[in-house]
Every structure is written in C-alpha cells, then in structure tokens.
Image (cartoon, rainbow, N blue to C red; front, side, top):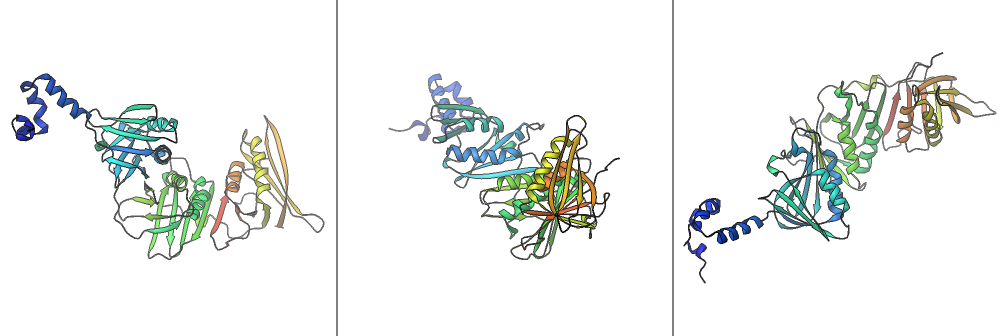
Length: 427
C-alpha cells in the first residue's frame, strides 16, 4: 500500500513538519489531524532507564550547588542530560558548579532541567530495588518518572536556559591523592571566616611550589596551615584563594580515598576545576591578596606542653557546655610537674547562669607556669581534626598566641600548625 504522505500526495509532505499543523487543520478532517497531533504529542526526547540508588546518590552530590533563592528560576533546577552513554547531572549557583555522571540505559538522547528539591525528595522515596524510567515530553516540557507502581509528572524548564557548564582545555593538571586532600581540607577549612565584610578571609589559600602543596585559612582570631608533599614536583607555582564552601563540598563528594583528584587552574579564567572519576567541581576564585600568615606564627615559646589529644578534646567539650552560655572563654592553668608528679593543665569553663566545669589533664610540660584563656569552640574545633594520640601546646605569655600542632611534628606526611589568639582573662 502506498503511503500518501511519503508519496507526496498531501501538502504535508511538501510543507514539512514545522508548517504541517497550521495548514492541515483547514485541509484534513478533524479525526485525521487529531490522530497526527496525538502522535506528535507522544513523541518524547530523552528516554532513560536508571538505577534508583545511583540516581539518588548523584542528586545528593550535585544538589548542594543549587541556588533555591536565586532570581533565576532555572538555578533552582538540576540539569539532567544524556552524555556519551551516561546520565549527567549538574547544578550551579553561578559561583559553584557540581557535575556528576551515573550509569544509565539511554534509549533516546536529550536534556532538561528539573526542580532540584522536588526531584531529590521524590527519588529518595522510590524503591531502591526497582529501576526508574524517565521520559521527557518536550511539547509539554515535563518529565515522566515511572518506578514500580509510582508514576509522576514533573514540570521542567528548558535546558537551553541553564547556564553553560565551563569547558576546560585538557592538560596535565595537578594530581593529588584524595585521602591527603580530604585531610588537608578538613584541617583548614573550619578556620575560614564567615564574615562577608572581608571576602578574602572566607576563602582558603592554596599555594603550590615545586613538590609541596600548602593550604591556609584564617578569620582574624585563628589560623590553620597544612602542608603536604606532592607525588611529583610541578613546574612553576600556583597561588589561588578558593571559597571555603567549595573545598568543603569537594571533601564531601570525594568519597573514594583510593582515587586521585586532578586540579586545573586555567590562566585568566578566575576559576578552578577539581576532577574526580565520576564527578567534577568548578568554583570561582576569590580575588585579592591573602594576608602574609607566616608573620603570625610564633617562632619560639616559653612554655610547651604535650597533652593527650582525646583527653584535651573531652575537657574542651565539657568546658564548652558552660562557656558557650557566656563569653566562650576556656581558662587554662598550665603547671609544670616535678620528679614526684607530672605536669597538669586545668581547663575551666564557666557561666554565671549555668555553673562551671573544671578538668585536670596530665601533661608533659617544659618551661614556665602560665595561665591563659582561649575561645573554647576554637580549641574544640582544632582538636577535632587532629588524629595523632598527642598534641603540643606552645605559648609564651597570657597575651601571646597559642600554637597547637600534632605531637611529633612533620612525619613525612605533611605538617599542621594551628594558631589561636588568646582572650582577656579579666580580674
């Protein structure tokens, strides 16, 4: 039987698909037009079959980059696109962008953007042992999700409105072990400022020279510095300031400690890219000059104590329960020992409203006795990121900064130094 459309007997064959609906409505019977129109409406672009757990994991990775309160509605969405046999999920707030790729069965290529919160909440309720079938209806701009007995239609925004994902020219980049990178980030990022009045202090300085990478963060009251050796020397040097939040997100999504991450800093772009095996993070850099932190680090001390990390941390947590109700002051009385008894550090937190707490921690102390006060939250946060059994506390006077570092110094894996400014003891 001859197909009248392919044979050219009807104007539609000459008009083409774009002009078919408008003219054919006045030429053909309604039933024929309706049938053809229904066929066109059923035509979908992007048909994907994906595992629920993979989809939920991917959404969890990228959703933290979503901007829910932006004036651009599309920034509250996640870009969903097929990409060389995998499904690509992307989110951005224009300062931070996260992309991940998950395995999927691709029947038809395509892309759209889906409201992040709705999409994530829905997928988290679906059965993990059942596949999720997704089909995009371009005409209606909606995504149909079917899994088990659940069928959902979500309104979408055209992917053309989504900000373009930055493209980086492939080069060697800098390769860093994920385990080392996560530890470095965790040991410095908490010290960055949250005060937007000084944007440069809301970031982390990354300085790379020859075979060493150093990260530093400060908020005006404390300083955290961590350095580590690179597996191979680099030519030239890199000195950038990355938003602390971007590095926190990188540490969160870099879960496989046996992998490596590559860092790219393209010239003149004001951006940095961190690329993992199945994910990548792009961040804007912070412009400005990071303070010369090396001038802040004391080069000598009059009192040096070696303390159990766990005991010091426990005492700080207990003192914080009371000090947080007042001025956050933890009072440290450092008393050297003698031949008959070890030295001790008395750690006190108090509040007029709730009471007080005192802990006595044994310590190996060299130098003069001293009473000094620190912000107890700062003490607790730095002790939380030190893994060695013991730490050293060095200072010279009640008005001098305190220096905390893992006992034993540089063990070949890198060096960590934390400086805390003292607080006023009062009368």
